[in-house]
Length: 209
Ligand code: VGL
Ligand code: ZN
Image 1 (cartoon, rainbow, N blue to C red):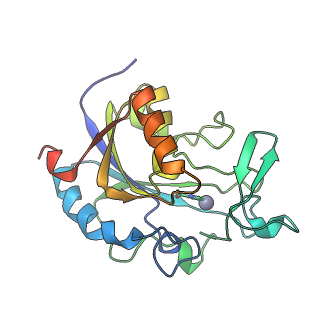
Image 2: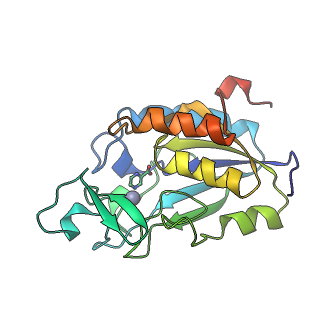
């Protein structure tokens, strides 16, 4: 295991569709943008993720006749929540928030671009096996510690954090610059998994720099 303290800030899915007015709006999703812009000043190395689905993606309720958004279906890799159509490749809703300062970003990793599999985590798709390449990128560049913020705490931020730990990274989620969807207790469940699996929580003010 390559644990060192060289740090990287990962800003997850701060996209228009996850902000008020967007297709899958996270309550107050846009309220974290200013805080993330401030937080980035404390980091040398920063990357972003971007949910990036084809228009007929299998996570969309619209791809399953008779199903509605937020219902769950069984697929070959387990349970999959169905979502409203969101973050469609090249469309406005998939853009990173225009007020998010991406200028110092060293990486933008896209995920969810395979039609038949969703990808909440920045590390693995929802089969928890297909890698996105992020772990290799971080290891190659010698990062051992990741701070994570963005949207949504209980889905893409959360599964990225859990998979990051599983990949051997030290993971800290910066709670005040995240917002949750909170579907049927998903936020409480995720926080329980954070404490069971070794994800630490902090606040922006606790980040050194
Ligand atoms: C997300 C649901 C579907 C997220 C992405 O970014 O948390 N949630 N796609
Ligand atoms: Zn998505």
